[in-house]
Length: 411
Image (cartoon, rainbow, N blue to C red; front, side):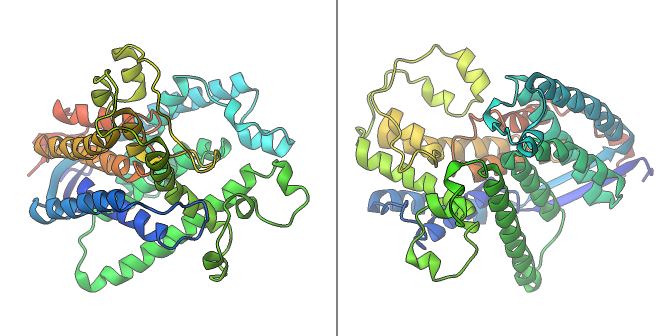
């Protein structure tokens, strides 16, 4: 094999979106039943059964679908050239946003004038997010395959603006991309699975601690903190005696509440709104719109009439409710089944159209898996901070682009 090329062979089920669905919703249900916060309302039997049914259905898909296999060749020179060009593009976009805002959130925080919501230009922010994430994934893939530290520079560069703007979501998304890439490149035997699980558990706890600490930093200007030694999250999350008895750091409640309150908001919406089983919406194009990026959906369809139903949040400051909540307020229980079944159909289409000799096809599974994972928070198919990465990779995989693959060097 020419030194300018890297042949990559991947055989795994780690990046199966069905497996990710199982892990995501199982984690939510398990943590929910710990009941560490009084913000969590009791789950109804019907919602619990629906979630368990689709978790079991996902298990059957994982069990009876073939192992995902990819065999592609990476042209190092072409990828490095692209990464260098994207350094310029991403730097320009970030500087453009910083100039428009007169600085960046970390600087504002140090100056005592932190207002996070004021940072970011429409459309420009989306392009920066997308370019940075795609480039970061490619750079990490090269590092994971070659172990050359120079590629870590690119990874750090593309993540660094996320630190400057104190955006946990961007850092978290890309961390998950990198973790899935690393896991998918290795073959795991059952005998070492316990060690791998322990490492993942320790890593997850570390991420939650950092996530919580950043949450406290971002909330440091809140007036409630002026006259108390409590953490901000301890004041707003209403921790139960069950949590207090664990003696765990209260900053973990940031991650706990972010993971569990979307399901609580969904259940509260179902209980309070009581939408008819098939809803009362006449704009059935919204069924398609559920799976489209917001930028496309807004332009492809006319603005619908106002919905008489709404999300009923348990508290206003934890305002996510999973991808199932919007579906429910529009179309009732039919909407929930549509969102779940439609997601499964999309996964099946990606499986059917998979190109095993295309790096984009591989990345489309990475991005779709993360979409499915984060749907426990909100409709990530619609969210422009993460959806474009999947669709770009998926479309390029269909056209079987040759930018990063040269079949002539495959032996």
